[in-house]
Length: 325
Image (tube, rainbow, N blue to C red):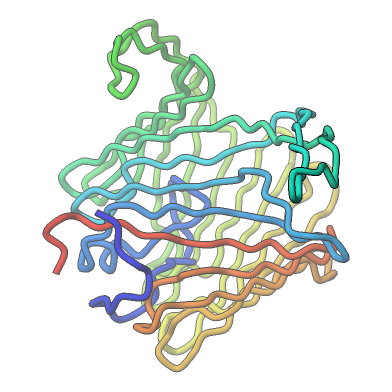
């Protein structure tokens, strides 16, 4: 059942969760409490691009999220550009009073061909992700997760799988080949700091992670250090007095020194208004979010892409479970 985005919805707070998550399903992490409270079943997103000085270009870019009744993403899809295809379109002749005033013609048009990636997520009774299955072509990359009694991930398995079901909307496991396995050991250094030892499928520690928390258990920083390569990644987070994320920073020396950071602004009700992104201290993107009259649900976003000199326009549409009230 489809509803206009301008209806009055029950919900207070911010639909987007921009705080760090352990397992990402889609490009956006949504506030599961608001999704559940408002009985959101699906969010579809369309994306068009307007280069500076040109008309809007619709390349068929799409994203979509489906939610279970607990408010968590169960399915996600997104398109990736594949190729451009040129087509000839016949333009009929124009007649007036029985006379041809403009002859028929052929116009060359461009069609954008995309591939679609599908992701399914499965949860345990504590709403923890236990399986993430990514479909690209005929094969599936599937990740299985296990947790300890504290809810910490202790195992991650990665398989290449095939589906033998005749109904492509359901999954029946065919061939399964293990690609990798990882195990995680946790050590509480202090009440505000945790160390994670990451073990590969050969039983060797290949990486250590240090996580620091504030008094409200918000992540302040997460540092990854690879033992053999000396590669290092660090993410840091800054919050306001209400726990809203104000700034996040990412730095790595993987190929060369890279530093990226984002600044966030909110309105008085706590809804996210803007995200401003920088890469190596150069402004790259300014994203503005527009909401419905309840100021909770995003109806569109406008992304000023300074790097590519264009404006990306993103529109959201919502569907709800039938017993939505």
